[in-house]
Amino acid sequence: MQKFTIFDGLVAPLDRANVDTDAIIPKQFLKSIQRTGFGPNLFDEWRYLDHGEPGQDNSHRPLNPDFILNQPRYQGAAILLARKNFGCGSSREHAPWALDQYGFRAVIAPSFADIFFNNCYKNGLLPIVLPEAQIDRLFDEVRAFPGFRLVIDLPLQTVSTTGGAATYSFEIGEFRKYCLLNGLDDIGLTLRQADKIRAFEERHLSQQPWLANTI
Image (cartoon, rainbow, N blue to C red; front, side, top):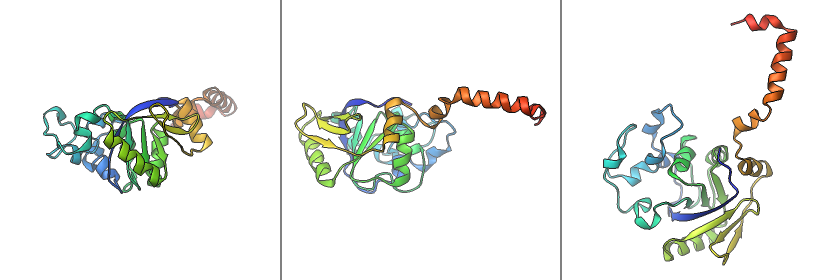
């Protein structure tokens, strides 16, 4: 998992509340048994004018010019600004996969659905909760200033406008913060104990050698 420390990114505003996981990554793309390749189908039903299917060549599909991520000024955006209850709906881990693989490192919103919120941390995507008044101000600024960027400082737990004209603080649990700063998902945390695991297995088999011959 990629480490998250201090990140400076272009902001894209998704001015919709209650964005559910079926909108983030439609159900037909869950057929894939891979954990990669979901980025081109992020917000598929909103980004494209036709119906998408897994394995389709997206480079020839008609784009919806009204959708925010298709507008030239937001190309390369890596911070998504959203409204309340982002990530509601079914509990699919594919949703943070798709956001991450599109290129987003963080989502800022007034609130998130619980399962999506937890899945973000497990996949290196930082969900930041800010008060609605601050979110409203950020929406106004990102619309008013093309190329609007934010700097997210995870060690200090702050979100700042370029140049530091405005700074907002956010909360995050210490364990989640530790994992993001060190790029550790559940597997990474387990592998930190690899020596202890191997020692246990060797000791276990030496005491009960017949287990090595069981199927």
